[in-house]
Image (cartoon, rainbow, N blue to C red; front, top):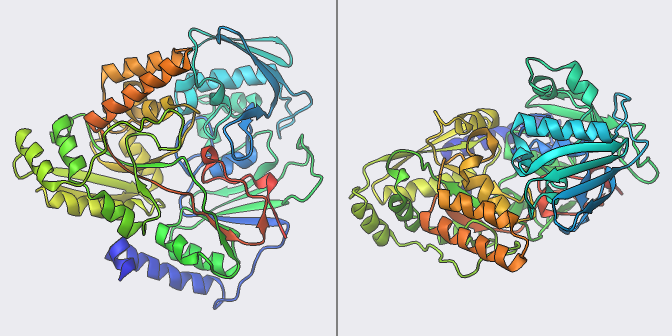
Amino acid sequence: MRSRKRYGPALLSRMLAGAIFAVAFMGGGVAHAAGKDTLVVASGAEAVTLDPGVSFDGQSPLIWRGVYEPLLQYKGDTLEIVPALAESYDISADRLTYTFKIRKGIKFTDGEPLNAAAVKFNIERQVAVKQGIAYALAPIVSTDTSDDSTVVIKLSAPSDSFLSAFAGMYTVKMISPKAIKDNQKDGDWGQAYLRDHMVGTGPYMLESYTQSQQAVLKRNPDYWQGWDGNHFNRVIIKYIQEPSTERLLLEQGDIDVGLFLPDDVVEAMDSKPGIAVTNVPSLNLYYIVLPCKKGPTADPKVRQAIAYGFNYDAFVNDMLRGKAKQARGPIPSNFVGFNADIPQYKYDPEKAKQLLAEAGHPGGGFTINYTYETGYWWKRPLGELFQSNMKDLGIDVQIQELSASAWAGLLSNPETANHAFGLVWWPTLASPYDYMWSIFATGAQGTAAYNWGYYSNPKLDALLDKATAEPDEAKRMQMYGEAQKILVEDSPAIYVYEKNYRLPMRDNLKGFVFNGVYIETLDFYGLHKE
């Protein structure tokens, strides 16, 4: 009964069918685990693109991280920035000049050298495609190379998050300039080619890729950090659409890690023999983003009514079994700059009905389309609760499931994007600016970032731009606090919950270190089996 209540009949049927498939796949339940030299990862959500410069989706970075590398990275489980492909960096006193020293002797897997010119080319590509992390590079006025190993970047104004733009999961990862130039079509900077090809400097290189099915990585024999120690020879990523299939394969030992599984499936594996499940604080915040451009939900009062009409406790306590807490505003409570003084919506259907009447919609009488993508299973029960709660207000919610690429295409197009949708966000940049700009700034609409609710507030835009350039930390955090108040009052999204990260894996897999910025990815090079 819990499965039926949590997923609904259609999804439950697919899960049962998946269970039958899994047993057949395993030869009647006999496991065929990969050897110690091979890591097998299952992902319930397929990669959208293999190009790290053009997407903010949550599932593609899993494969990016094995092949591509950034200039900087976060150390272990912290937000401390340390060198990666850059051996050092320097920031001028006025925070307008950034100088990177690039490690010497590193090559791309096509034999081309990683040097200052290659870094400059990749930065220019990122700015030109106007996708991915390009928004964080907007202050750049020049990128110069004083020699083969030195890159100097000058900014028009300080930015509190600029350095972290070179360290996160969505960052300027280094791609072979030759591979891009040789495969460029109609000035696309190699985007079509890089959707299913990879040429990086990382520990692994792409051996084969079948979209929606499987990716296989093999060792880069010339990897600059070498192969001393215990490392995998191959990494296999299987895209498995059925949670029950993924669970059974993990329990039987056919896979080593199971990503993008529903919460109750993960909970069911806790304490299972041979399975270890992480339980660590994350930086994730879960939203229902509302369509703000047209229709009844363009009115902030209607959106406030919806926020009061959602039963937060029902989702946190019943569906997540109390292993989460209601969010307070647009950024998580354990992240830098969180404003604990902002108000928090509580379930109050009478208040919701009153606000709807004041907005000219007594008894509701309109429809909201809620769309989610295959693989993000938590979005289905979230949508079903949203649907049930809104029905009590006279609002009809229609739920639709799409493939990840179709979902992104629908919502990133302003002509087709008048949909509500579930969203989980973790930081791209180590600043409150990241959560609020990426989801709610006018400049983040369309393919620029993730403002697919098409909310627009010039006051918020100006406040965020001013805050990120403010050198005084106390003043900067005060402005970010004010921005959070605006977003609670305008309610362009329902701020639903935050929770710990729970990832199931085989208990003989060692070396896993969780960092909330790199969530839903693995450091393949740092893992091994005992």
